Length: 316
Image (cartoon, rainbow, N blue to C red; front, side, top):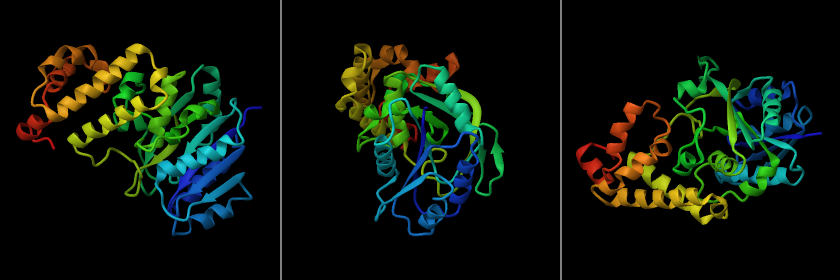
């Protein structure tokens, strides 16, 4: 029988953690195991976890000092790998959401219907007090339902880990999570896309909480130039992993071309020689743009180097 393991990282999560754990207890298809890595909490988070050890099949691993959510999730996945077979499934959990009761049942049924490595649900959006502010996370955040492998290579992501279930067989590709990976779920999505792919369903599976202490939340604080540098770091990281040689030759070439393009965009004033390359790859470079007429200014903007954009267009 297929087993389901929930992995979670906690850090000073006392405010919402009990609600999250209660929603795990109330699943119509219970988890077979729950592995939590506490990332050096200084509040009552660990005590709350201890209260649920008799209610959930819970194992808690405690870090003495805070090491960051990527490392905490990596440790939890490494622990899960010890007991799971390739036919089993993994769900990623955040400490501050509320899972709808049918989340496990729905996502397990759908992933078993499709030959993919990962399935992504949608979410209701709630505020700090639990009031619903949007029916759909995807609509609320203008998030594409699906991204191509090439779009993911350029640094785009549409997957939030707490809304997914993926196959345990993917762990051999996921682990170890590279130190340069910005967030664990972006790396997991890349690994799934590079192997058997992923699908999205429109059904909400959780209540996703937006509040001041979110590790990710909506958007980020990086500047436009900062984003270019992060995307360059991400693409170079992929090229240095063992996964690069498993990509199709056309995708390898696209990745190399993309790295060269971003490097020049960060150092040059204009890049007219890239105009036709940008046109050919516009759907990978701008997957969030769905109207053809809206692509034209994006393509033209794409040949402007960062230095000129900062100077003349007020970008930073």
